[in-house]
Image 1: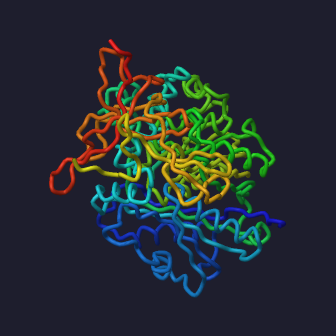
Image 2 (image 1 turned 90 degrees about the vertical axis):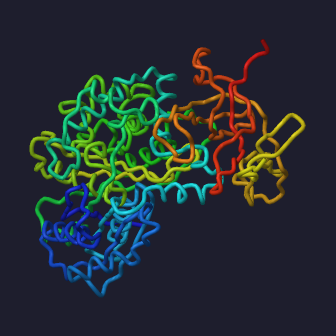
Image 3 (image 1 turned 45 degrees about the horizontal axis):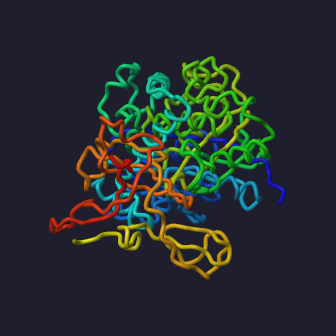
Length: 390
Length: 134
């Protein structure tokens, strides 16, 4: 199939944090209004919407049935097809992919993708039953939590490649420094290597600051085919590659890599006709500090086993080879499950438009977004990658 | 003794062992048992008792973790010779013997894992360091 050139015309995002006094509907409406205003398109021109939310934390309170329709009714978008998707932590990217594909295929010309989560509402203990109940190995019974996955990876990286705790801390220091420049970030407070290493231990070697927080928030994007977009913008951001895959769940690969990320990256580079050496800036899934080091390697930013040195030598910092997580990453923003993927795209669109302020990467032209989602047996269940071009 | 997750292991003459499946068509060993062979989709499957010893691929000492386990506890991946990787609680480690450590030999053991809603102990598999005699 010949796919059309699809561009991002509008982006919107709420502040990430605790929004106890607001409904999820109100938070979602804010991000969607922002994206539609940014696109400069009438809300009545939006031909379809895909909304993303995971709702893992909210099981006991209900699943927010038909949330996209209810949010969009509030802002006058009615009488069009609407979809909801869920894909764990990659949920937002899957909504984005759905809109991309429906525009690329010619089904529609103008679509809206949004991602949202309100995690500060429910009893978080409920998540454990939800994780374990459908996993045949019953991982949660065996003590698995989010941090334990990457703590196990960190210990293997340290034994196999000599990654150090200081290198893990340097990921946090870099991202939290970028986070201080992002007004949407939940934790815009700089930290030092010593503060990271001396913070409360969660799962050895991961301390509290090496783990992302959770929160409430939303992000949205308006996509159009490139021809339609000419009516609305002179500064479009092109989606040069969009890839989604699921895990391999290998029993044999060393637990320092996710095969799905390696496969998805190869597909994305081929689709975009670029390589990692062409990237100026990237938002990658730093849910936990060792994840960012692993991703450098899986995404080809550096060689196998060189991820620790990549951060230590500043290659992912401002002025480096590929500047990573200028938004502050999940470690600064908090991981607002459904919103994260589109929030990563929000930052990269700002970079490619040249409006990222103090975190602007000079002359950024090519950007990569990477979002991991879900987990079962040695690997994330989903990997989504977008390569964006000016 | 009240057992939990009994679909994952069984008693043998040597003690408990994890139970998977072997495909009679393509030979693929999988764990836990499934409806089909995930490799060839074949349905001609036989039960496969997995080795009771393996190596600890990696681990973490968990301070803030699952609420049903008393902290700190150790969780890790155990690699069995059948090329099956299993997530397990790791027990019986001695810090003076540099335990746990990556790639150390381990063996399966039946142990208390958690309690049910009535406070009764539930037993499940765990792995512990495999030490040479003496």
